[in-house]
Length: 202
Ligand code: GRF
Image (cartoon, rainbow, N blue to C red; front, side, top):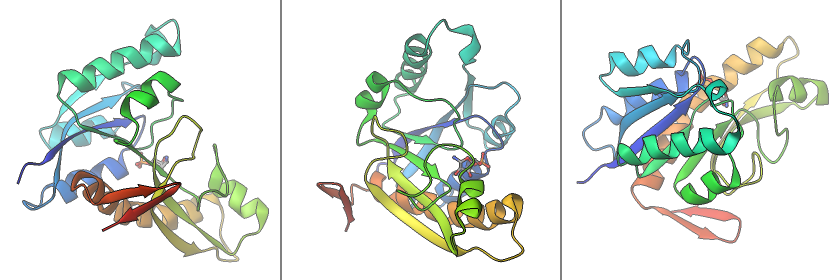
């Protein structure tokens, strides 16, 4: 079985990255993580990658005059490593349309809400403020519109009366770690078929 080569883009703790690394340790997993790129030198996810023997790159967005040049550098790092799929995992930069188009159909994002509800930032807070009783997370293909794009996997969790942002985030994160590896496996194995906005998994 040939495993698809995956580059993961992070900005922080990298617990989703860890879930992908752990899943890819199984011999029959259809993808391998070959590169982790962080835009922040202090991202803990870099240590997780190094511990797993995965190549890392720090591409500090502050060194670039604009988003285009930052994205070009990121794109060439991914291509140099012969990446075939990109996973955004807590990557806190907006990507340019040119970058997104270059990877369209081959780039996934994990978002801590049940899309299309609550796009953007601080979405667990948005969910609490909206008073919803069910929250969750979504893995979707990345398209030029933010937090849009065909949905591969979702998981729901209850919102409890005593919840604050941190307890709700933790409950959602547990589900993120479950669904992200599943979605990547489906994409890497070529089991996703698009019908309009719907991603169907065989
Ligand atoms: C996750 O909640 C993810 O959905 C969001 O950012 C957070 C990253 O967490 N996009 P981690 O770095 O994977 O631990």
